[in-house]
Image (cartoon, rainbow, N blue to C red):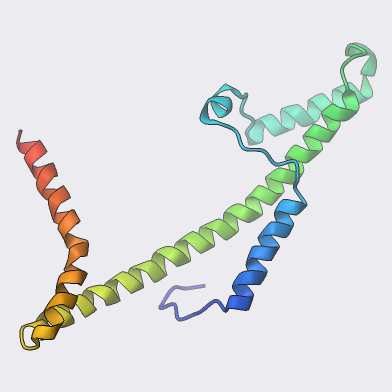
Length: 160
């Protein structure tokens, strides 16, 4: 869908249903875990090329069970492989959705910020003639004070 201008809303009911749908997905995946950075670092990673290797290993163990020790659980190995395949598909779908949500959020956030900058200019201009707006202009201008301080500090750091 080509991007022009986003003019949309999410109703309270739709947002509630979206949250419920996400909860439903999580309910259907009760085995999901969260790993620490250290735990992630220690794991062997499996990419697309490795998936074929694992599939072939599953087939090899199923077709030749006599070559693996009796305590090696071939059925569990096959289940792990199938779960990997299934989760890869789910992740692909979620990544597509996440990308669309992220892109839409970026675009609508940009639209909101552009409009806010216009409003800030309008208020600053009007505050020159309407003293009651000076506090509003100052409040809106607070957003830029921290930015100016950061830029000034960065410039000072570069000069040092």
